[in-house]
Amino acid sequence: MIHMEEKYFIDIVINKEKLSSGARIFVAHCPSFGIASQGKDVDEAMKNIKEAIGLYLEEQPEKYEEMVCGEVPLFSVIEVMKGAKVTGAVRQDCS
Image: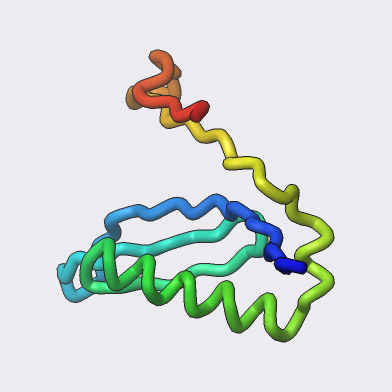
């Protein structure tokens, strides 16, 4: 009998931010678990957030029960003009 592991998808948001020193970093946020990590580029930020999520789930395996197996999260990006006027969706991924 072949044992197939369940596959879960977790939403990650990466933003470019500026430190007080002026240096740019990439901050990866996992809204589902309230976890964040960072890196000097997107690849490093992704590597670090994957490690952080792995450690989190290792310590709290019951969190798997809160995730939906096999469903990719939906996301959208909206443009907001100064004065809080929302102009519409810039990009949406509903794959």
